Length: 248
Length: 248
DNA sequence: CGGCACGATGAACAGCGTTCACAATTCTAA
DNA sequence: TTAGAATTGTGAACGCTGTTCATCGTGCCG
Image (cartoon, rainbow over all chains, first blue to last red; front, top):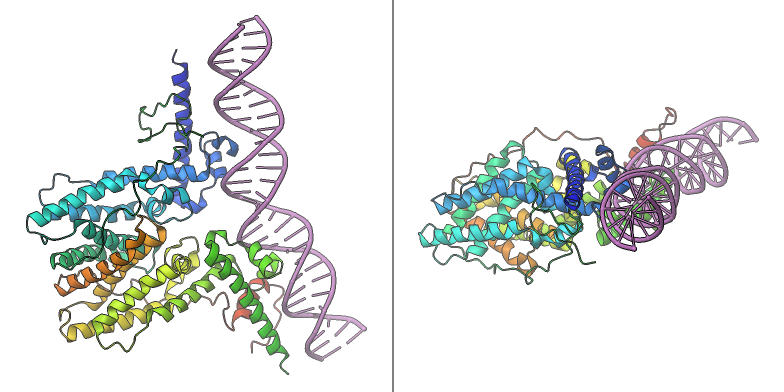
């Protein structure tokens, strides 16, 4: 009897419809202008119905942030096979910058918005961050080994410096303060090249370079999607990562 | 007789009380948690009364942003007499970074928040930005003249690169993403030093370095921090007839 | 004294996120 | 087949929010 599974699938479909509606509103009008009532209207449900799928508005945006990371992941690892490690590093940071321009609302949600506490709180759940850092740090080490960067370079600190720089350009453009106009791209290039040149020059880095806390404690894994025991997260484009039900 | 003046003074006092209350709430609880009703309650007025002094909530925060720039100005020009121009540049950017830690709510309001459109819109009204840029660019030129930086350095582009870097660290800390913990200070230093080293190495900068538009068009005077407060409230509320008033 | 400009207000409007009792439907078990 | 238990959707409401508006009182001017 595939009844349970059918139910789970239907549940998943409504869940997806909610996320899609929220994403549409959110991409086109920004986080602040998304309301539960508008989402509900778009999927032709009552506002209260959404709460059967997502426990709060924040939960929806946590899910959207995960979607954003998936998007970023697609665009930010374009040439894993790039033979030149320095070129690979460059390209990774430029891809991050490009993402901030192509998906400013996602970028703001993921990196800027302070009104969705759960995203900040459970930041370490986003595996993408760790993976990218690991990959780039490896590439930086490779640069050191090949003599493209100093042998005694601290790759973690170098990664953080590059991140900070490109992050700054991206934020300045997304927030439009100060206005960069069409010179943002040039600035992004400048920042990366200048930082790389500075690293090449062998400036002593004081940054230590590891996580402040221990490994992130697994938070409640709520926010909808699959609720009943049949997880069904494997079906199609369901979210990755854990979707078991919370203890409660 | 000084009746008119006394009135103006009283008006100014209420205006200040509103700003003070808003600032208190805002600094301690963040922008999102400030409501007109709470501000009104704090000054023991009705919510509607505030609209005789500020035409909207945004106007209040525009005024607070100006206050923030005054604060930043106080902290960011600590040693105009610093003889070493390179040291002066360093210190200016570090002061900016310090400000972001001491007044995160102001920082967010001034540089991050996208929900107060007027701030972004009238950004160029904040003279502090232009002045600081002018001063630092001058110092960078001085560095070039003294051989501390390449002679052919584009000081505007260098300023932007340094701004982007320190901005990135500040934002990462204020937004707590990715979590920097107590290593933020070290990262700030690293970014400045690495960028300076990169500039010293003579990386070609592609950034052009001037405003995108023409000179900022002066917007209608808003919010009334000082004298013209009467103007804003008048223009907003005084739509009752075209009453003549001695425009002084 | 009349007229009037202004300050302050209570009530209201439209919207928000969220909760809750309740109805309808569907599945489970006897 | 029927009773009970879930599950899902809803309308109404709660307590917020920013903002507007008619109205009332107060003090200034002629």
